[in-house]
Length: 461
Image (tube, rainbow, N blue to C red; front, top):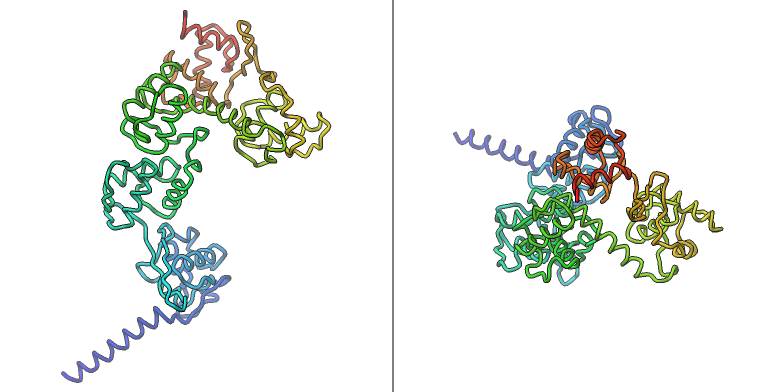
């Protein structure tokens, strides 16, 4: 019996030593360029596939599990090492192997707040990582999360923080995520945490009157995007004051309802795609005026080139449209059409036609009378007002298309969900159907005759 016990003890120690040695002192070093069953050791023919599988589990690797230690595997190993406080050399040795084999290593989607604790000799003796926050979690980190959400109005500023990731917190997180185009899963990973911090430090990074409101908004909702909507309604005199910043209350509902009614939009009191397009059209004009006013002289304006974007690009496009060098709308994106327009403008004004808008080009642009709209070949003039309108056709987008879709909706030719400001196949089909009923040419384009007929049908007075 004693002999059996002794043998069992020895075998247990051998197995324990082997397990520890295998985890901590893995004696194979896997590196870039190696392949399973070719460059790896005979007793580890599928080591690289195993590494790729573990990297995929921890969300660092998305490639094929093919046993080829290529660029994708190398980069995934580097990222895993950095996130797990390992030496980042892109090689899989003992420590990296052990960390990959562990069940509690840091995933790519996990975020970490690192706190360095130092002794008197200033050497780092500890690093504390804070992991992904999920519903059901508790602690000071949840309180910090709730405080951040409060500052952006997604969490009721008047509600005491609970330090518990409850349903209210989850809903607040999902609201924030949706407002900044992140996956609205209610889980706070690295991207959500970084976006929260950035939004609190500088709300205009994601929210302003010249930026698109991403969420559809309605009664009872909270968020900084609700606050932006309230500001826009107040600026347009639909609200006298904002009494509950960031909260879609009765006053916000009534103001939005009045805005929709005045602009001939189906009055629902909700901010839907149709209403967003209308509000964006108004706020764009305000942003353009602000951009022009902020730089009185050409030398005060930034240099613009292909790839630039923002209010100053919109301003330049407005001048180019007015001068007849650019058609369409000023979208704030310096693309190929804007580049060609700038070069043509420069050549005709005796400037270097390099497509870059510097002080000299700004000076010439700002001499253009922006109140006079350049008329493209497919534009038409309303004989009753003298106003110039663009003929609308498939592929167009913007506020004018939204207005067209509104008219079609009021005639029950499209559904309200189809009002998106984009002239697609469904809008074209509805236009042709209307043209057929009105005895007009069925080309699917909306020129003066079609627009006039639509307006007369909707507003016979």
